[in-house]
Image (cartoon, rainbow, N blue to C red; front, side):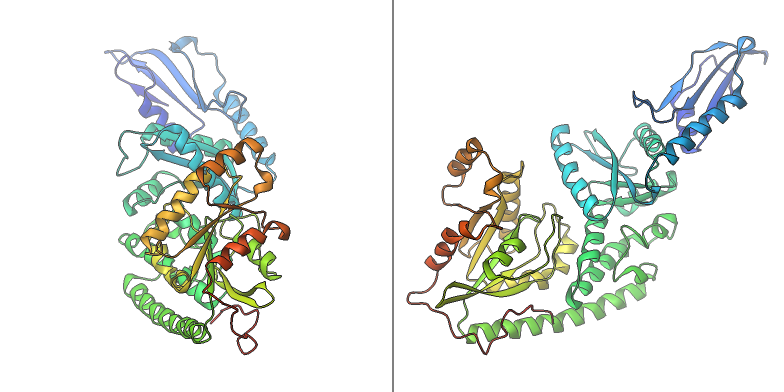
Length: 465
C-alpha cells in the first residue's frame, strides 16, 4: 500500500508493480495538501475465471468507509491460486505460453502460432494459451509493451506456466531484458527448433551439427552473464550435445566451434566418397524433399520396404537415409530422404545442416512431397521452393507429389488439380497409389537405363559416417 500526493487513483504503473513484484494486491491512499487521508482504491490479481480477467480494480471510496478484511481476502486469493495449481495434471516445468508479436495481420500471426504449437508439442511441451499482439513497430528492448508484458505475466500465473516462447528470434538485448522482468524461462523459435533437433539427432554428424548450431546461437548472448544465460542451459531450449558447452566463455566456445567444423569437414569427405562411389557405379539418385511432417520418410518406407523411423511430429527424422528403390525388377535407383524444411529457418541452422543437405546436390531428380490436406499447403510449397532456390537446387528436375490425398475432399481436389496440374496425387502409406509416381521417376531416367548391379554396393544402407 502506498500514497498518492495527487488526487489520482491507481495508475498503470501501480498495476505493473503489482504484477511484476508478484503482489497479491496493491492499494493507494490519497492525501490532501495537509497530509490528511481522502480516498482509497485497491486492486488484486484474479485466479483463473470464466471471463479470463487478469485482475480487478475496485472503485475509489472514502478512506474511512473501507470495509474490507484485507488479510482474509489475500488468504482467500492464495487458496484459489493454490487450488488452480493443484488442479493441473502436470507440473509447470513443461507448461508454456506462446506469444506472437509482429506487424502481420492477426489472422496470419494465429496461423503461424499453430505451427509453433506443433513445434512445442514435438518438443514435449504442453501449450496452455496464446498471446497475439499486432504492432506497427517491434519494441527493440522488450519486444512487448510493459502493459502487454504484465498481461502475459498474469496469464502465465493463472495457467501455472513456467515457459514463455516467442514466435521469432529474440535479440540478445531482448532476451536479457525479458529475463530481468520475469522469473519465467524465455525461449524463442530458434531455441525450440534447436531443442527438437537435439532430441532427434541420432548419428555423429547430426549431433555435431546440433551442437554447432547451439554454440552459434549462444555466442552473441554471452556479452553479459546473467539469469537470461543461466536459463538457456539445460531443459527445453538447452538440451542435447551442446548442453555442457553452453556455459563456456567465448574463447572456449570459439575453440569448440573450430574443432566441430573440422570434424564435420571429415564427415563431409566421407559422404563425398560415398557419393563418388555411387557415380562410379552409375547410380541414379532420387532425393525426397519437402516441408517437415509432409510424409517423406513414410513414402521412403513404402517404396523401399524399409522401416525408417516415422512419427506425426515435426522434424521426426534429421539424418539423411538412403535405400535402394526397384522401380521394376531391372530398374534400380537410390532413394534418399533428408531433413524436412520449415519456413523462416534461421541462417545458423542452414549452415549447420549443410552436411545433411549436401545429399541433395548429387540428386538427379527431386521428389517434392507436400501434405495436400494441410490448410497452408500453398504456403508450404512456396517455402520449400524458395529454400531450394536459396540452395541453388531449383535447376534439378522436380516432381511434386501431393501426399495424403485420401484426406482431401472432392472440391479441394479439383482446386489443387487446377493449381498444380503436373502434380501427382499419392497416399504414402498405400502402395497401390504410388505407381504413377514410379512411372514419373522412370520418365527421367536415361534411355535404356536398367541400373547397375548393386550387390557390391551396401544394400539397404543408412549413411551414418
